[in-house]
Image (cartoon, rainbow, N blue to C red; front, side):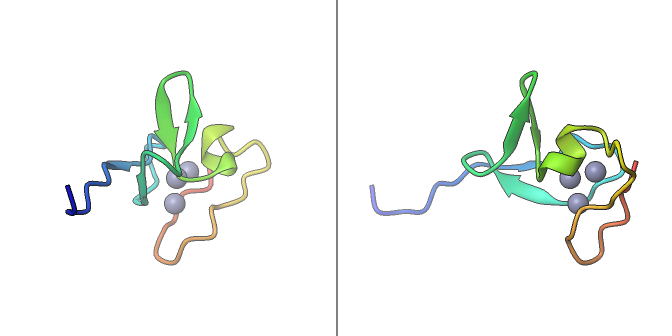
Length: 57
Ligand SMILES: [Zn+2]
Ligand SMILES: [Zn+2]
Ligand SMILES: [Zn+2]
């Protein structure tokens, strides 16, 4: 069992293009998000810090 087997999921925020590993994802209501901003629905309309990602609520 030496192979890397990290399950990658796309952030559940609809506008977010980020992909995160399930281990590191922020989980809210069984959805996986890349960061707290996405998980909270961008209450301050802050984007996540990831390059190329335009999501900001
Ligand atoms: Zn993002
Ligand atoms: Zn995200
Ligand atoms: Zn987002």
